[in-house]
Image (cartoon, rainbow, N blue to C red; front, side, top):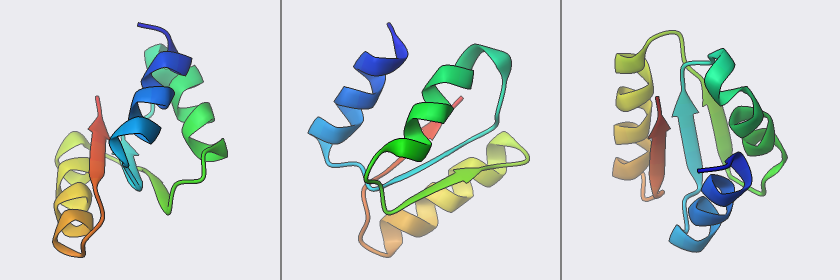
Length: 68
């Protein structure tokens, strides 16, 4: 699936927060996340940090996605 299709799916799903560990495979996707009207994008240090950040966003009332 292309990065643009993933980004479109996030918008359709109402995601307002994305966290993930930067890697070469998701480089285009993460660059697109920075340009979306998301409430926040977090480049996490480790996968567990991305999941924890998404859990916190969800507890705060924001739909979140962890990209790995």
